[in-house]
Image 1 (cartoon, helix red, strand yellow):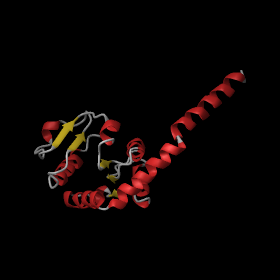
Image 2 (cartoon, one colour):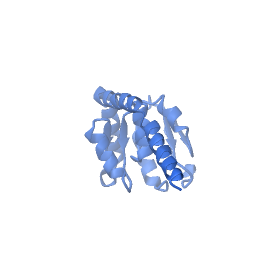
Image 3 (spheres, one colour):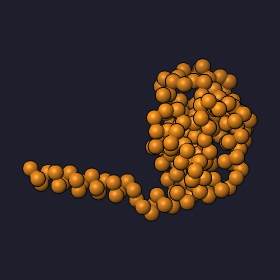
Image 4 (tube, helix red, strand yellow):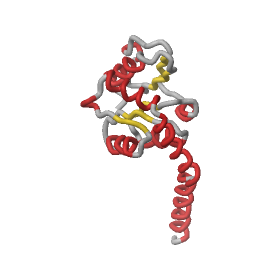
Length: 163
């Protein structure tokens, strides 16, 4: 799914209107970064990024609404603007919007102007950051990954003792 250069072009056009914001755009390996010009000032394009480390410093995450990125954003208390592409992403994007942790736009309605409007909305309305922070606290309290690992270990232990 990392081969949709027109989506990256729209993102770059939208963030060009926000020169005060540092942007890190991770494009994967399927796109030639030289095809994504012009690159706005304050924008860095990389093939891979240390996502969690960046989210710890981020005010906003623009995401395709994959489950990993969504959960990592929420675990850091970062609101999102989602552009779902396929699979479960439209449902996850709808949940981001429903729970107030961000906004989303589907591909049929995606434009630089629409994306810019959503970015500004999420950055300027504190309720999105507050909701993302709420989910950060919930995730920290529930220790979901620890609990999931314990369940898997218990199931594997039971399976090995039955033999």
